[in-house]
Image (tube, rainbow, N blue to C red; front, top):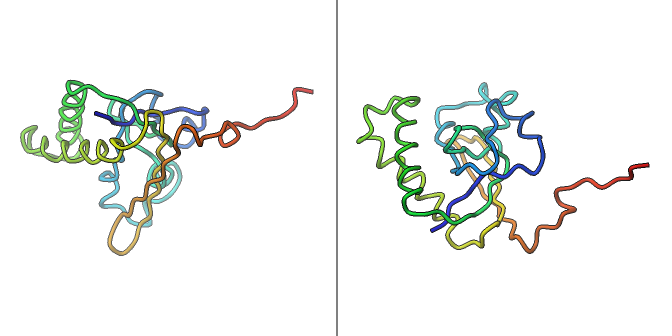
Length: 158
């Protein structure tokens, strides 16, 4: 079974997200956070979270990149429970029992995106806001096709 973990290629997430996720946290898209948003919400750091932030399931912070990784069934079930509790605590779900199926759908959706990819495949999300609500699109960068030049800036020490 596979899911995604947050990746920190540099320190930029500390500067662009209100709550940046630490490296190695399990993550999902988290687009539900923006379901009631409109253009007036799309400013500053919240705009960056909307545009391309994955939601971690540990700190509930955001990350620009996630990578596919193997997960145990026990870890998977604990994440569903943690997300369900987050729905109760922060989104007004009436109780854990009502929140569990929704949390399971969210984690299952991410698991479905990861399942057919090799470990360490990088995933990126892009969101836009249209008349019909939030639209998400996803990109994948396979580990063998990711060159260091795509992520590092090279220069001289002189």
